[in-house]
Image (cartoon, rainbow, N blue to C red; front, side):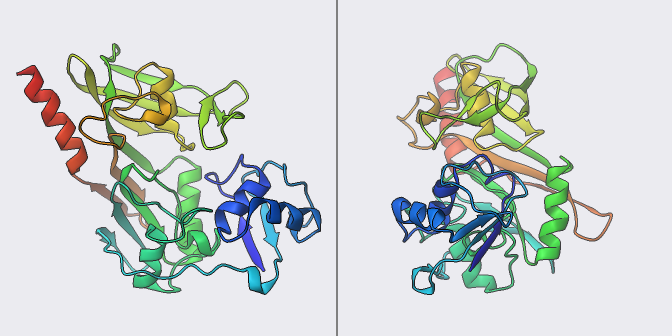
Length: 303
């Protein structure tokens, strides 16, 4: 039996798609059959495969034992920048998935965490997301908090929910962003034509990003972005909507592939309250190789 509590990251998804993500060995059609035949409940009630998940939903998938997929520990190096008895902060490299998906169950941050910590990770979000409180896209690098137990998970998740965790990103945008500083407050929803993408929509969730220009080039702008909310692809959607997509974010209209095939976006700063104390932890990391490569290229072109 698989029990998962839907968090902000997993909300606003079709039920069958969500279960396909966390059960990669099962086809979507098989999962739909399980849902229709009563193997899945949401808040103790059956639902249709098209049901849209909501934050706080309790999903129980009572699948046959021979269908359960096990996520294997893998000896993948971890760059741990902070750790105590209850949690850690890891610097995730660009190119690594935060957790397994329907298509990939190997080489993710979760595989690496299981190798180092075994079962000493929170399981509130299920085995496929052991320890994971929030995530970064595959090609976004930087800081991620990980909970070693469920009590810590709940403590940190409450801070995230109440917007008490400060998360800052650095990015390079296509074009010359006109405003020196701007608060972007645009609601975000899943794109009905492509469920892998998000979009600005009046029917979406409230989403706020604070953008501050740090340096301008002729064809690009270096910015710092502070997340007030934490929607899926929030920064990428907001900057794209403002006609200044992230450098080489080809999914949302960015260009610049000559230097890198990944979007130039890094989570570089975190500030949060240490579990079960009044002490604040503040972490900042330097620009990664991808950011420096593009930045130096733009700087040399200007000179």
